[in-house]
Length: 155
Figure 1 (cartoon, rainbow, N blue to C red):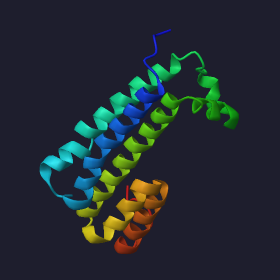
Figure 2: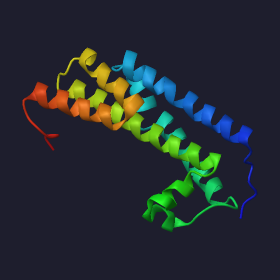
Figure 3: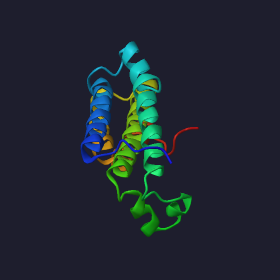
């Protein structure tokens, strides 16, 4: 078992760090969606990679804490609840949301540009993706289907 650097202050610092890291990505998606360097930052290189590394570190630390649980925790609601019994587990879960919501927002911006959907129409979808993940994703799918007169992703 690894020594744990975890204290409430450490977990709070990690929480603030991941939140601070993801916000520039969202600002780029909202206000500079066609900026070439912004696409590199947000669409899978810098910001998502740093968040993914932070997530991995948080998961390893959480799994090495005395109260950690095994993979069987994912098989029941009670087990999943135990994953969030410590601050590091909560920050890891939060980072998981941040990475995937940013990835979905990035996809919305790229897909809307490819399909000629005005960015001003995508902004509400981005806001809800940032705040409520799947709701913003569903909104964008509805907008995309309405705009393109087809249901589905056209894959």
